[in-house]
Structure formats: structure tokens, C-alpha cells
Image 1: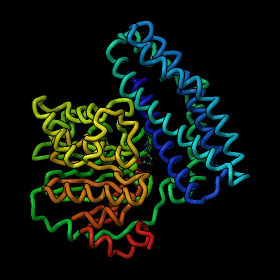
Image 2: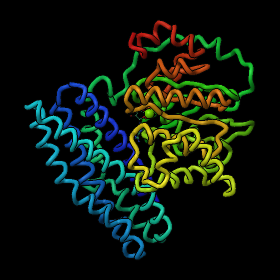
Image 3: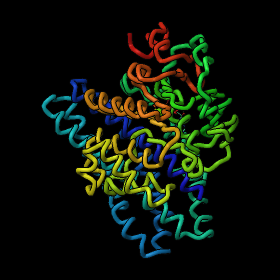
Length: 441
Ligand SMILES: Nc1ncnc2c1ncn2[C@@H]1O[C@H](COP(=O)(O)OP(=O)(O)OP(=O)(O)O)[C@@H](O)[C@H]1O
Ligand SMILES: [Mg+2]
């Protein structure tokens, strides 16, 4: 099932790119110019990578064989493959609208509308593949099918998908990163190593719930986490701040067990969980609200919440859901509607609610304020504050460093895969280097 791993990795890159496009669209709405170089590099990437490599590989191997194996495949794959066929036309429309928008301010709204539509479709396409197509593939495909599919996905000589093509995609991606506005920069910005203070971190009162030692994680030959030490005590809210690409998401995903670790140890609630599968970690109480929310658009709000409780005894689910509804009344009102109909802020509430349905001992929140309007950002932080007041232990990842450190008992600054500074939230807010590097002061 190597193919599924490759597809999922592609998806997470695409999700990142889509989120970046949304950020840039937001900036254009606020008056920033339309930069044709940036958008052309994005569209080139999507054309070369998604339309000419990622989709054909799925169509020609995975989806074809799934259709041969089960009549249930058609219902799931028909709309996905229709999306694949529509991709090139949508891109050329976007290219044309983008050029017009870069030349005439009064054409911007039309471009932005289509761009938003595109990113929304892209995200629901990715979600549908992850949630419907992949589980079905796991269920119906035989060992010999996987051998054939994996061979196709792992063929390093393949002109469209092999090493040469991948190097070209990486090149294109770097180009996007270099052209993206500073505010959303996909690349890692380093502010130099900060001198570690660490006194506050040593002022241990409560017993640690989570103790991470020397954690390393790699993407192929790239080391994303370079030996991280972090502790979270019971009842604490700990913020992890750092620039784009610092490794915050990788750290969260390594904790929840969906990203492999290469070295180090993770001790949670008194036991070493380093070797536990992600669902077993969830059962033990590590529940994550992921970056980009990743609610499942076509499913109802209720069903999204139920997904969060799949490790829990059935009899507690309805009661827990009512608690979530008390916290987020808007979700109750819309409980039977598809989650895709919710606004960004409401989807964030749903993502947090879904994590809470797993009855976390440690709640992981990855960029809950990402992409939200300022008022909604405030609302999300209010939710975090009230969870904290109820005694929840929280690990909060944020680019919105000021707001996160203001709530947090303690914080860690992460830079290109290493912890460079730690202290109480207030100490970090007052630290000159942190202010200069992360708080824009
Ligand atoms: N799927 C992937 N394949 C290869 N490299 C990756 C992948 N995901 C992340 N990386 C790299 O790992 C490093 C850490 O990325 P990560 O997403 O963890 O950072 P982050 O701090 O969460 O950034 P952001 O603020 O943009 O969410 C970056 O250099 C990134 O380019
Ligand atoms: Mg991240």
C-alpha cells in the first residue's frame, strides 16, 4: 500500500498549497496586487504535478483496478474522476482570469471568486479521496493488485512520476515559496538562534503528562525535527510558536503518531507510547484538531463529530455530542447539514469539537486561527481559554504568536526543527528577540 502513502503525502503538500492560495486571496481582497509570477508558478505546479502526474497515476492504476474489483467503486470514483477531467479546463480559466485581474482592478472580484471556488473544490476532492476512496481501496484490493499499483507509483524511471519529474516538482514548489508574499511565506524564515533561558521550564510544579525527549523526524532525506525536548504538565496550556516550515505541524503529527519518528521517545501519562499506532494513542487520550481543519465536507456535522469518537464506547457518544453543542450552539443548529456548508470559523469549531469527542487528556490544536477573519480569531482564542479554564491540558501551535503566548502558561519557540527558546508565555512575550522575530514589534 505504498501508493496510498505517496498519495497522502501529495495530498498534504497540495493542502498546504491550497491554504497558501487562500491566504493570498485574502490579501488581494484587502488590496494587495495580483502577482502574475506567483500565480503562474502555482498554476504551473498544479498543471505539471496534479493534472499530468498525480491524477493520471490514480486514474490509470489505483482507480482502474478498484473499479474491476468492486461495483461500489463507481459511486465513489465517478465524481472524483470527473474532477480530474475538469482540472485542466479550470486551470486555464483561472490563468485567463488572473491575467485580466492583474491588469484591471475591476476584474479582481471575478478572479477571486473563481480562485476560492477552485480551492474549495480542491480541498473537498482531497478529503473525499482520503475518507472514501482510500478506505475502500484498502478493503477491496488484493495483494497482487497492490503489487501492481505500488510498482507503478514507485517507478523511479517513470517520465511523469519518477525521480526526474519529482525533482522538477520540487523546483516548481521552491519557486512558489520564493514568490509567495512574506506574510504567508511557504519557506522557512530563520531569525538566528535565540539564547535559551529555560528557567521557567524547570520550575516544575505539576507532574508532566507529556514528556518528549530528543525527538527526530524526517521526510526522506530532509530532517524536519532535529532532536526536540518538550514537556506538558497536567492542566497546562503550552504554546509552540515559530515561522512557516519550522516543524510545528510535523511535531504535532509525530505526537499523534501519523508521522513516523526516527529517534527519541514520547512518554504520555506514565507510559512510553513511541511505538503505539495513532489510533492507540488517541484511545489513550491524545486527540488532535489538525492544521487546515480537515473536516469532512460532504458528511453532516453530527457525523463529523461521531468520527471523532470512533475510539470511544458508543453509549457516551450522544451525551458528549450534546456537550459540544452547548459549547458551539451554531453546530447544533446546523447539525444535519453537510460540514462543507459551514464557514471557516464554524469549521474550526467543528474540528475542535471533533477532537473533544475523543475525550482528550491532551488536546493538540494546530493553527486553529489560521485563515480566519480577526473577529473569528478572537472567538477561537476564547474557546481555547474556556477549555483551559475547565482544566483541559492543551498544546497549541500558532503562527499568531502574540495571541498564543498570551493564553499559554509556557511556550516553546521552534526554529527549523529545533527548540531555540522556552519560558513562560509572559517571558517570551517580553523577550526582545521573540518580539522582533515573531511578534512584529
Ligand atoms: N510532506 C512533506 N514532504 C516533504 N517535506 C515536508 C513535508 N511536510 C513538511 N515538510 C518540510 O518539513 C519542514 C517542517 O514543516 P512543517 O509543516 O512541520 O512546518 P510548520 O512549522 O507546521 O509550518 P507552517 O507554519 O507553514 O504550518 C519544512 O521544511 C517543510 O518543507
Ligand atoms: Mg504547520
